Length: 103
Image 1 (tube, rainbow, N blue to C red):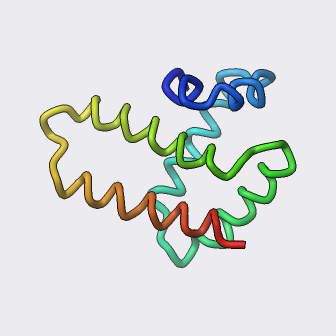
Image 2 (image 1 turned 120 degrees about the horizontal axis):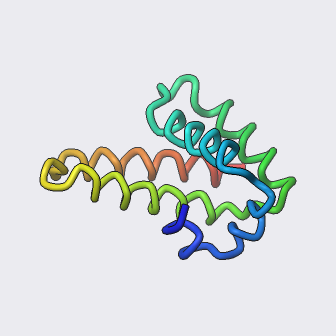
Image 3 (image 1 turned 90 degrees about the vertical axis):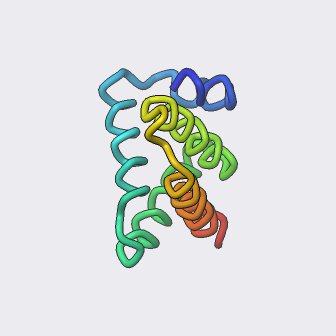
C-alpha cells in the first residue's frame, strides 16, 4: 500500500478509515481478480467497480494499484522474474483495465 498511496494519495484519503484486516481483504480480492478465470471475471469485476465508484474510486486508481502490486511482486521474485512473467502480467492488466473501463 505504501507504493500505491505514493502513486495515488487520494486513495489514502478514501481508505483512511480502513484497518489492516480490511486492507488485507482488499488485497486478497485484487489478487483473486488477477488469477480468476476470464469467464468468471467480468461480472465480478463490474460489480466491484460499481460498488467502489459509489465510494469515490476513480477508474485510474485500479491501474495504479495493479502497478504497485506488480512492483512488489517483481521485486520479491527478483531474478526469477522473466520476460514471460512480464508479458503475462501486462496482458492480464490490459484485460482487467479493458473490463474496468467498459461501461
